[in-house]
Amino acid sequence: MALFDRLGTKGKEMSFIDHLEELRLHIIRSVIAVLVLAAVIFIYRDWVFDYIITGPINPDFITYRVLCDLSHTLHMGQALCMPPVQVSMQSTTFGGQFISSISIALIGGFIMAFPYIFWEFWRFIKPALREKELKGTRFVIFWVSFFFFLGAAFGFFLLGPFTFNFLAGFQLGTKGMLVTKPTLTDYFDNLTNLILGCGLAFELPVITYVLTKIGIVTPKMLKASRKYAIIVILVVAAFITPSPDWMSQFIVFVPLFLLYELSVILSSKVYKEDQAKAAEEWD
Image (cartoon, rainbow, N blue to C red; front, side):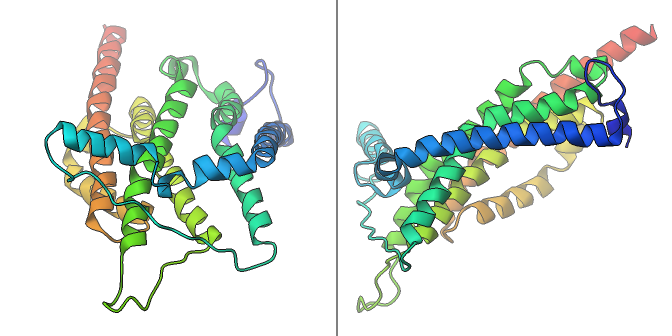
């Protein structure tokens, strides 16, 4: 309730019902933004499906070409060249393709509208923050959106090709009696988990910054918890990647661990600045 007591519009006191009404308006505007972008995606659904949704399983996908060119440049032969993915998807219900196109449009609309959604969320909680708390929130919308899209791009361009290449090429048995023919829903669910999972996981530096600012986290705590953080990151990597191969999980683990180390550095910087300001005020 303390948070709601501090929330308000232009400094005016608001009741609990007023807060709920304000929150409802923010949610409605966010939903409208998602629906508008979803409608655009639905109109161009064929192009979106051919060049974006099925990108990671397209033999001409940019990641395959870049990795292979990099392998040749580094004189590694075909080490980084992944074999072309041969995936033939199916829809097992009459309305399967239509329902999947709606899902693609809605999730795509949410991803595209993420900065606006967070902006609406920020507008709701900002009045509850004190002037001291607001000093460290400059460009917060930019940084939250930046790390989200960085993670989403990582999941789409790097983790996706590795994951689907492994899953499509994995063969059980030696007689070729089993053929991998996933449904469109199965493929899209895996792709969504990769993109959204990585997008949210990459918010670690922002979360650490906020928690350090409000005094919940300290750099000493982060350094002491590093060995536990490694275990948590491994669990998160296993959760994000649908494939059980160590390569895909390692690809997720490395950037998440680097982000954790970045969080430690960021937390140290923020903590030292806050301690210096506190010392000045005390003097």
